Image 1 (tube, rainbow, N blue to C red):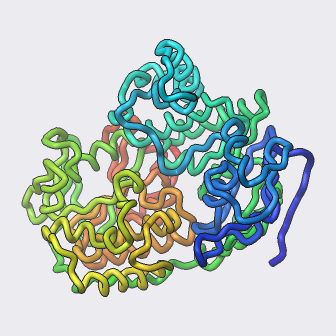
Image 2: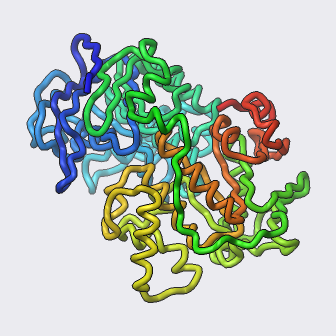
Length: 503
């Protein structure tokens, strides 16, 4: 395969011919990659292309099998990469790694702790954390600095993760889908911070995202991985169209047409009367098998989702009814018993069972709902049918950590297909997945809807709501519902006007 490259002078990281296998699976097949000081570099590729493995090698978390690697101008052997990377590189992962029982300030300062039994200067910790977080959002910094991370929303935790990297003093930042849970305004503030850091402090930034609009807005150059190889090496983004990028990622066909996905639902669900969702300010009637999008900043959609899935307890103002029967969603168990399914946007901490194999992850919801104690022999056949229908490569007894993020997300949605819930609530289900996997997830959800499930879908991407949803409920930045838009009204302009944000 022809590779395109544009080389320049000295770099913070230079990787040449990097190879890595996990058992019989060759993940990286000779990857080249270089990142320079004073630039924002987009690292692109589909799920499973090797981006995450490359980042782990460059940061010393995973050893490479072969290839040459230089950090800060010095060649690094296999045994000294981690030490060098720890002072040069900071990473914000797609799945967050905060300690929920500690405060925001403590989480930001924790990576700088060098000894387990050191005396902590609480005032210094707080001051350093405040400086880092103020770079992103001054109001949030003063309001949340002493709060426990467990009390923060998902998008607020993302801000803390980013602030932690800024506090580390690293000269190279890896940002993996950093804006996935941010509003347009918050993303713009982040971009301003990154530009200032690049221009003033001459740091390098590696930006991983599947949102082409923000890639073009923030990045200078790009590299593209495909099937574990480098197909584009350090080309300026203005030399590639969006279609060029999709084609080089090997997803030209995926961009043009949805994948056909067979889900293995045992039998069609009988048509139900409209699902009713209402509060004091608004009533929404949703036809069976429809997809209702939730649009806007996290405050409104998150509060609604918490109530629908039982996370809000008895609090909240929304009511959900099917066949004029108000559902009891005062706890997650009650919500599940009432026929409400849920896929969290935080798949690592609230979705996947990382220590259990794929088969247990696929069967988890059914086992909980049916109260199964023993594993049934028929489950293996059912789980394998789901795997085959979703074109998931791997075996049932493999851990989900071996799969790409997009494949993990498909498994979380697939676990509900045996139950065919009355309502399925999805929280950012395509966060951090490539265009091909997005199409597959769209097909999954449409197949569930075709069998009678009403889908309630929160997305921060207006273009996605326009493509997938039958109607959308918009919220303003304060969390108040502002409009209910039918499918023909779902334009990016109308959504931006109704929500006070653009995405």
